[in-house]
Image (cartoon, rainbow, N blue to C red; front, side, top):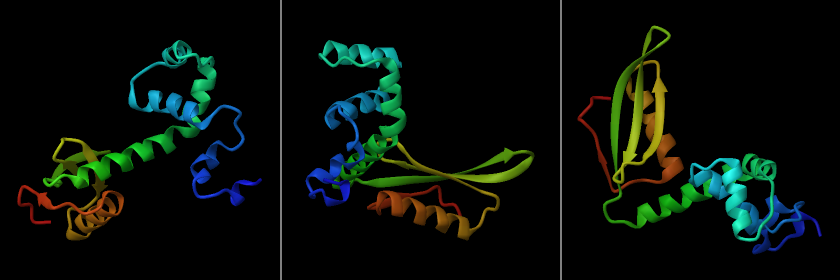
Length: 154
């Protein structure tokens, strides 16, 4: 059966289609590398303690192939949990930085749990840059209940 003929329940296993190892084991190895600051031998050692015998090179391959997928799933899960809270708010800030001798404005959005949601660098300080930043973060994280700023004009 090809991946295109999979059912809806099996569709989450589609990226793992050609691997002999179970998808939950691959996800576990990738998540250990994404969420915890562990070295590859430490990841393979922790999995060996659980009865899963893999080499550090296999853990590196799984992390490079599936790490971004696991990180995106974790990000979506965190955002869903944060939206459920009644105080879902963002703090927006603008700072001027010099990059190659030119002044740029750096925008940053932080949620109420002090996690950086998005950063954005613009050459000019203008309303278009601020709107572009807001559209980008709303598309990625959804809309907040409250937006807190330091009363910047843009």
